[in-house]
Image (cartoon, rainbow, N blue to C red):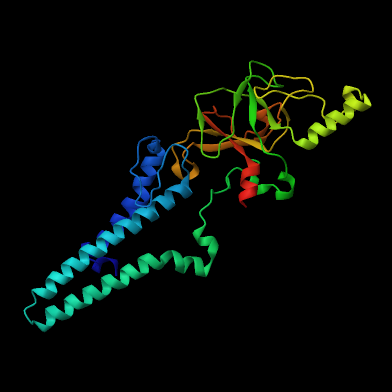
Length: 296
């Protein structure tokens, strides 16, 4: 019966709830990842771009490190009890049992990853969670991988108005950077480098004297997004995706940048068509999906 359970039995459960549920909830809800977190024993750091799967890995690494320290302390205590038992069979038996339990715990602690990987390798591969609560939001998790084949995205131009109007801002995609305090942006274009095949096509179409509307590549651009006729180094294209977020106090429905508000591929004349909430955008990320495809 619950009424027969003592305080000592409730204490581990209470501490676990505080450490693994309440503390992370408060930190995520109050933008806690904006402060400097200590580096984990295995060298992992958390920052504003970290997501829930990063936090889980961070806790696991600290668990391994702290668990190892706890086992060491237990071995020291048990060894001291064994040396001071003065031949008392009961104390010797208790000390040996503690040493055995500590060693067994250390073995299980160090072999936990191997055990999980043996059961199912996917259990040891922490990946970002898809936006399950944004049913209409596009994301790489919901798109056929064959539809995402394409050249890398070198940079994007974001515009403060729809239909590529307004002063453009040039940004480079990043797999681990979140942009805050910029914008708002309502449309954008992506750019990729010309390949040798592209240059051959331009040269061949020049020799044929094709008109602009007949050309495969009608315009090229420099590395700043300025038009350069047919002598530039870039063209429109590339697998870039922009994801918009807004702040929310509910950590369970957010990552470190906020809750997903919409995703969009480039080019797009109106980002707002992909929004699933009528909120103010407080953060966005730009990622080159070709890098994710090459890793997969």
